[in-house]
Amino acid sequence: MIPFDFEYYKPSSVQMAVELFQSLHKQGKKPMYYSGGTEIITWARANSIQPGAVIDLKFIPECNVIEMQKDKLVIGACVTLSVLSAANPFPLLTEAAQGAADQTARNKITLGGNICGKIYYREAVLPLLLANSRMIIAGIQGIRETSIHNVFLQQLRLENGEFLVQILTDRGYLSLPFVHYKKRQIGNVGYPLVTVAAIKKDKQIHTAYSGVCSFPFRSLVMEQALNDSSIPLAARIEQAIGKLPAPLLDNAEGSASFRKFVLKQTMADAVQILERR
Image 1 (tube, rainbow, N blue to C red):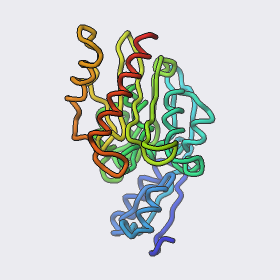
Image 2 (cartoon, rainbow, N blue to C red):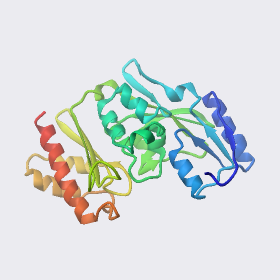
Image 3 (cartoon, rainbow, N blue to C red):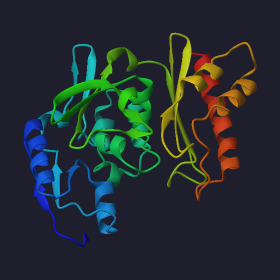
Image 4 (cartoon, rainbow, N blue to C red):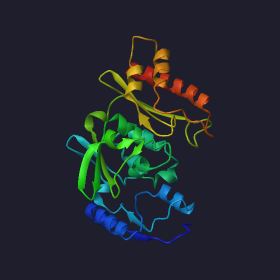
């Protein structure tokens, strides 16, 4: 149960949502945008956040689409991971989405919510980083389109009052050879030790990671090391791990040393499979 009162709004257009936020912000109500809401509800129950108003984006048509527009796949930020998986327009994204939480939670978690979340893992962003997806973002200055690499730097970095409307992915990325691994310490439940997503494009292997550091990421310098075919694979992997953007996580899911061991094995599996394709 959420231990405080708040106002609830459900705008039916992007402009209405932005204007509502600005108005509520000026009133000092600390508004928050809401799509799936799983993290917001958890924080609110723990009294970690106390918004005076919540703006539900699920009633905005643009936020709920899954469709091809010319040569681009368009996915609305409020599409749930379950709906996304059932539609399966981007198989690597489907695998990543199916690995997040359990089925009941995926019925609520949205693609935008997973990307915008604060939890370490946020696995659904990995295929989008690999596919150089474009983000449609709305705010008081209007609607803008930008590369995911411009706004996702450890987390999605939006200006105050902005929200993610849609994600665009070029058709060419949707059917590339890929692998996806999610390694847990025990069984098929719980948070991962390591998640690795990888694609092969133009004879080069591209990789993205979750659970390795305290944020999901793609690293071009790690990819450069992995694609250096002049040295053995084990040496490539050691070089790549030496270029991690932050320390390895060391938490209840596994120690940093064990996580490194699992990461090395997973990277080897990914590279070996994609090199044969």
